[in-house]
Image 1 (cartoon, rainbow, N blue to C red):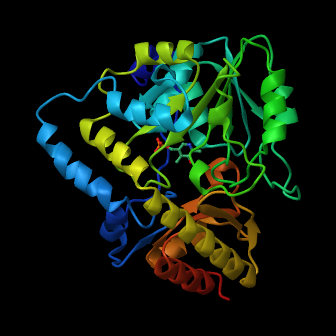
Image 2: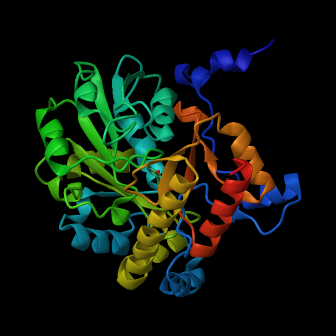
Length: 373
Ligand SMILES: *Cc1c(COP(=O)(O)O)cnc(C)c1O
């Protein structure tokens, strides 16, 4: 009788392991009895959302008995204006992860292939696996490269073949923080055959200040096989609400809109996202805080003798120069939650999200203690 239902499941599910999220604060309180916890484990905005968002949410509460606008008309209008694209090019998702899953569902099946990089965001592997398609995982740049552990586009291009349907690129990538410049990324997309859809995941777009970093939303009109994903979970501080979107040609958007759940984004999330877009000052404050604090945390880690991968996001990949799991656990006892990344084949690293000044001070003190510095 064992595993009967496992045998009955769709082929990809056998090898599927659930996504490992950052440890929730309440769980650490329950398990360890620690209080006053600092969570720097899920790349959230430590300032939270704009106060305008909170107002919009309480106003939208009046709509709770009604189903949401299934087409997200107002939010799509605002996004269309922002990106200079028709609303028909937008697919809203329950977080951008939802859109990544829709892409896999729409274009993959057993016998088809998806290409992504080693150390790339874990959700690519999960959504590919669920479809039973074949993973082609390209080698990443080595540790000594200017973008350590980052995507190697040449290695990825070498894995594109007749069965390839999707290529996933995180720019910047999580957990490495590495990024790709406009010239190289554009040449890569240009060289792809037409039967291959390239997904550029820009979850941390708002944080990047490198001048050569591209806004690929501006390439969507030129490349019919390009899909760009964005989210309100990171710089906009709305991770708990679950809202993100894809920009693509209207053909691809039409396909995604056929398979998505009709009400995959809630009325509250739509209203909140709309208000978040309007508060450019809050976004600028959030990005500025991150820039100052990320530099400070990086410097502190280096002073402790740790290795810091340069990051374009709101987190740092830190080389602890020893197995990181025991340090992760020791940090939990200090009331600080970070992210072990052994599941990304980086067993000696921790991924540390950038918090407020006070949170980062707590982190640095705790780090010094657990490494015995
Ligand atoms: C956090 C993250 C996302 C966003 O996920 P949501 O579902 O929008 O919360 C997408 N891609 C990467 C690389 C991320 O790190």
